[in-house]
Length: 365
Ligand code: PHB
Image (cartoon, rainbow, N blue to C red; front, side, top):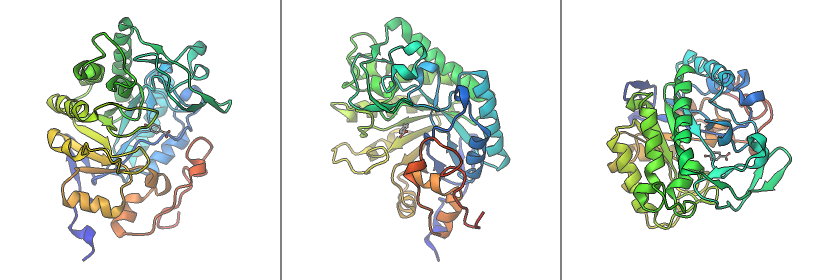
């Protein structure tokens, strides 16, 4: 008997009030194909609808405000036109029987004046420059030193998240995920490499985690608990992020999120888009029993590892990223152990339908 016949990976899963067709998640994937005004397009609706056999789709990261933008052509979730564009995406996914949540994003220091309104400096917990470059449309340019947010500005950031969560509801999403991973704004607050603040949002672990929890609480005013999730990447160095001691930090984060009863915690296991093993002594597996909601594992999963992870119950759901770019019918291919299309890196970001909606299905269309 093939191993999948005894696995629950391909069987329905109850995520709170949401019934998922299976335990396979499409991970959030930046594809930089939004239209003018960072509005989702009909082509994006077609792309997501093709992938609607995933038990759950987490949308590509979507900026909650113009200030939160860090890349060209990433979609927003703050303007009426963006909400209308997303409504077409969610309707197309729902028509195919899928479920989709919106990933809410503020990049913080991982931006550039060329991507900001009026050429403003990007904002961050502290004026600490990221080592790295950013693509602005004029090519790759060095990051700049961001401006530290004032204490008085923080309620406005939380209000932007709250409004984005309301917009996601108006756009027909099934829930929201807070992007607190990969070195973007909320992760910058979490970590002592990027957060040098001396006010209530810096210093102790409790203070550094405060903004994430206040954002979570704001979303819980808008959405039922089971429809709110958080994504973290405790051991990833993405976007020049680091913490002197991630274990107590993310243990606290996980316990606090669990106490709030949020629906799902999505963990990038290892280096984002890279190796799962980091050599760090902190074992991410210790987080799983601390969280009472749905635990999503992500990063570098193969079919075999996904089956083994379910067999050992090390995660409730398994998220696949790059494999979903190249395989719209990934669930069916995994179930049948069929060959997989290979993702083409050159078409990950920007461009048209090539490398986006033209990857073949098993039946050849
Ligand atoms: C990316 O564009 O590669 C990217 C975007 C958002 C992430 C991680 C990676 O959280």
